[in-house]
Length: 492
Image 1 (cartoon, one colour):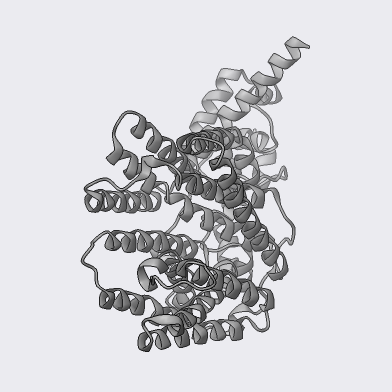
Image 2: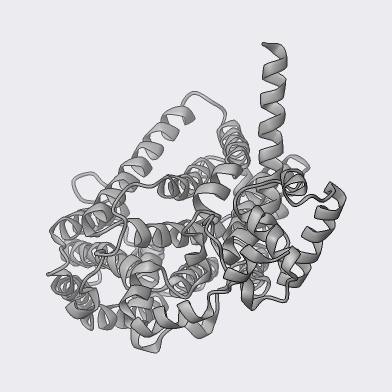
C-alpha cells in the first residue's frame, strides 16, 4: 500500500509539473484593435457602473441616517434592491427596456440630488439613484457576457479596475470639495446613462442559442478565482497591514503604475491569463510578508496590486459564461455568486470575532494560493487547454463567431494542417502519433526509431512550428485523433 501511495504521488507531481509548464508557456492574444467602435455603448456600461458603486462614499457621501442605519448602508441596500429586482425581471426580449429604465432611475435620482443636497429628501433621491445604478450593473452583466468579445471584456475590466484606483487616489486629497465630487460623478453618470439608453434589443438577438448550456468544470474554476479574490479582499479589511502609509498618494501612484504595467505586459507578451492569476495570489502573499518584515509601504503597495484579481475574475467568468450559458443559466450563476459573496462576508465577520485580525487574512491568502497551485492540472485540462480553449485566443467566443459567416469562413481557411507546415514526412508521422496521445517512448517503437531520435524529432518539430510544449501542439492542430492530412498517412 505504501509503494502504491508513493507511485500515485509521483504521478500527480509529474502531472502538476507538466501542467504548470504548459500554463506558463501558453499564448493568448488580446489587442486594442479588437475593440469595436459600434459596441462602445456596451463596452463602457459595466465598468462605469461598477466604478460608481465602489466609490459611492466619495461621490455622494452624507452623514444623515435613516431607521438607525448609516447613509451608506441605506444607499447600498437600495443598490442591492435595484440590482436584484431589475435582474430578476430581465429577459432576452425586454433587456433593452430594462437598460433604459435603469438609466432613467439613475438620471432622475442624481438630477434631483443636485437640487436637494441635504436632509431626508436628498437621501430619497440617493436611494433612487443607487437603485438605478443597481439596475445598470445587473443589466450590463448581460451585455458584458453576451455582446462583448474577449478583448472588450478584458479591457473593459481593466478600465474598471484602473478607474476605481484613480478615484481612490483622488479621494486621498483632503482638499477635494463637494463641487469637485459632483463634477466627477457627472463625468461618470452622463456617459453611463447615454450608453444604457442606446441599448438595442437586436444586439441580443439569438443570445445564448449556441451556448453549451451546462455548468461546466471551467465555470467552477473561474468561480474559484472570483471567490478567492473576494475572500482575500474581505479578510484584508480586518488586517492592519493595509493601512494607508503616510505618503499614501505616492504609493497609490506606484500601485496604479504596477497595475498598468501588468495589463501592458499581458497584452505585449501574450501569456495566458493564468499568469495574472499568479500575480494576484503572489501579491496577496507578499503584502503580508512585507508587513512582517516591517515594510508597511510595500505591504500597502502589494495589497493594492492584488486588485488585478478583480480584472481576471470578471474576464474569465465573462468568457466561460458566454461559452456555456444562456440567459437563464447566467441568472443562476449571478445568484450563486451573490449568495457566495454574502456568505463570505458573514462567515469572515464571524471568524473575526474569534481570531486575531492578521491571522484570518494571512491564512486565507496562503491556503487559497496553495489550492490554486494544486488545481493547476484542472486549470490546464478544463480551462486553458480544454478542447474549446482555442476560443480564448480568438477575437470572440463561439456564439459571436457563429453569428458572422465570414469570420467562420476565415477561421476555416486559416486552420493549419500538416500539409501547410515545413515538416518532413517523418516529422509529420511523429506529430500524428503525438496527437493521438502517445508519449515519445511509445512513438519510438511504433516508427522503429530510438527514443533519442524521436526526442530530436520533437525538438525540431517544436522549433519549426514555433511552439514550446505538447499542449501548444494540441491547440495548434486540435485534439482529434483523426489524420490531419492525406500525405501524412502514407509518408515514409
